[in-house]
Image 1 (cartoon, helix red, strand yellow):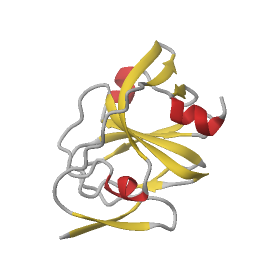
Image 2 (image 1 turned 135 degrees about the vertical axis):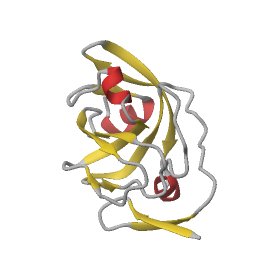
Image 3 (image 1 turned 120 degrees about the vertical axis):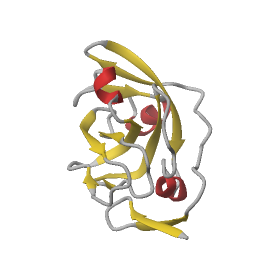
Image 4 (image 1 turned 90 degrees about the horizontal axis):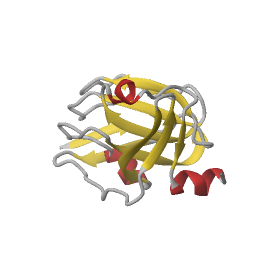
Length: 153
């Protein structure tokens, strides 16, 4: 069985259905500065097209404080969907400079498109409700070596 989905505008990908993809957790935390203070998150980093296509498909749950950071090849509007993803997610769209553009909720197993609405360079997927629990809001800044390498700051 093959699961197909749209990830980036104009790009359609397919991945074999089955087991979840689990990438190594990066040794550096993803740090976000919020109104509540700095918050560290552990992240798996998805860089390749195949990693983008698989993402968090087939995962039943994510631990608190853990997510997947998608690093896009270009800064442009993107679209995600939740087909084959059985758990609800918060999808944090992040601009090239590391600032949160928007935060949206992805519903389990939905084929509905979730657009970034703005050009973005990174996307963070975390368990549903984590964004509110951590106090994430548009304009908050993420820091990580990957973001620094791309943004130059």
